[in-house]
Image (cartoon, rainbow, N blue to C red; front, side, top):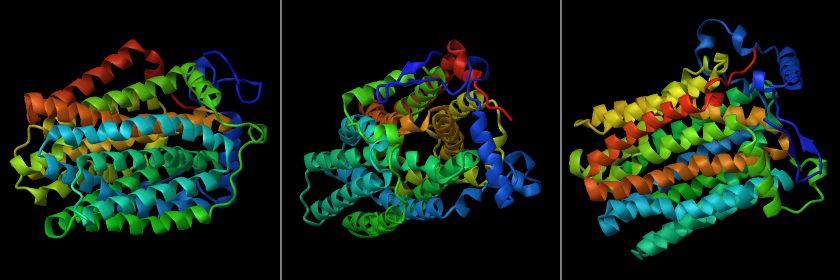
Length: 457
């Protein structure tokens, strides 16, 4: 790894670690974490005893700003799952095509890639609280538009694609901003725990949201699913309003955000193979193995129609929640790179097995196992990013993270939908899971930087 010249300040930003200890949290952050633990009486992860060594670590919730963000995010994310289910169900009802459902992923992908990178640069330039408020307001407006088109029976697949694209652009700004805020409102020693809480919360919403949405869609007008999503944004806006001011670093305040800032962020990423490889493994997992574009057709063809749709959309999240509430061990794992690769392999195998299931309960169980592996993968990828990059780059790095995390599944939707239309649902589903596991193993063998990544005690 080499140092990279900062396009934002003229300084040189050195990698956070030496090659021999890649991934170690720097000494100052360790000191801060220990100081906070001493003042609050909280024990480090290694010193937790009994059931607390396994149970999820909730210490970040004692910080008021993080606690409000957690509550607001939990409520709004629950509501967003109604739209996440309603849009593909509405598209499949209008077109009867897996391919059209897959194209929804493409509609969201382009604005996601563009605005995630730009939004990440803005998060390094502007007050992150204000940026979060603006992007959330745009998301709320688009959700209202989805409700209106549904109530008015516009029945236009093209309009659905346009609205999905607009919403994706707003999400692409909101996600890196929200993630970059975490390292400013919790101490360094609790970043992994805060990420685990966030991912567990979001997956809990992905369990409850699709199940309730499935009941609404099966028994009432699909328009009400969009209405619930719009109402849930009230909590997210409240949480953002209550955040303290989060201005950028002083050296960033006088600059404008442009292509140079985005390019610099990408250049920095190119000098950090650990982060690059963590993104590559996740892209393989999501593009090759994400089966959600096949859920509407699978529910209709194999599992009795709309009553099963909620369970399929919730299944992955059920496993993630189970892993989250028993995640006390996560912060104690030092070989996080190897653990990340193993988690992706398990994800692919579990998804492939679910594609062969002939009973709904078995498909849900296997997808749940995949979801548990995905939670572990997500926590390690996010923690690596937040502890590896300096604060003045975290917004841009979170932008790349958002493009990968949210863009990968959208490409996966396209792959799954088009492959299913040509070769069938089972081939698309099972083949993708097997391919993801193989690619993860090959990346781990060919590029040892990620496999060797570990954190210090």
